[in-house]
Length: 312
Image (tube, rainbow, N blue to C red; front, side, top):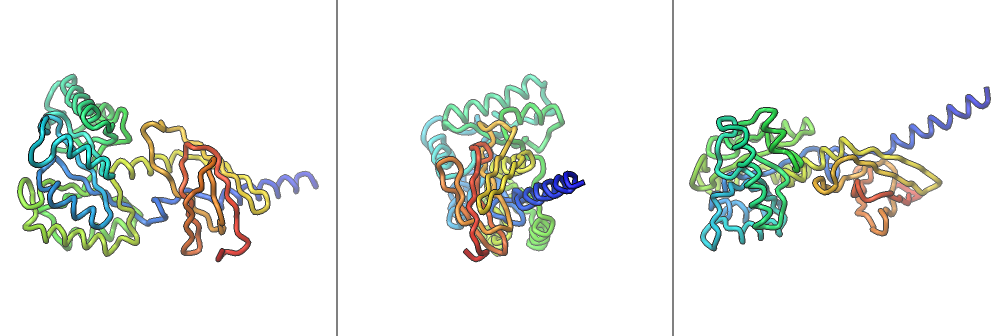
């Protein structure tokens, strides 16, 4: 009888240990996420959109059509420009070689459209494209599986942000995204010219201001980073051992670490004074009665040192 009671106490303690630690829904404990995506390499994305994003500390995803990019120097997107953008934290995604509808051509040609664009981006920039956007948003299960091979995912749901967008409609979409702990992926082509462009640059800036007003609740990051976070979050398992004020957490993630590269936010109500993973000190933030620790799900054991008081 005493042995049974002791086992029950040990089991309850183990359950409570695990209940104290979880991966936050989004990075840094944000309620929702937003990704800016831009299609086709329109020149005013470079001259107008990117400066506005960077001024606010944001980065976007740019889906490139391989054959549209000139080999040498020129105006607009060139391989040198694209390589520089990737170095500044923007994502360069694949959008096929010639922007053909992948459902209207033989499957072997669709494979070539995707493979050739992926290979060209890697060869010209040194950066492997980690996400894909379908021309005309056209895909079926077979095409989707093929296009996502070697990537974290593909854009299959998006909200148009352009000339057809209305302030009331976009505001409602933003607030619903936050209320539902969702992820809003915008899709933009032209800014002041080109397909579905805005009435003016000021109109585009107005939408950015709506987003900035909600930035406390939004994690704003490129498409592949958010996709990677969500899939890692849903896959990782946390082994937890507590001894006094020391906690050892063993993360196990089965995804391909060469493709999935987002760090995760560990969330706990316990006050953490210091966190390390291997020989690296981890970023620790405490607010709203919880602690967030940024960690790599592939980098081994995490050691947390707890404070005696919640305000330390």
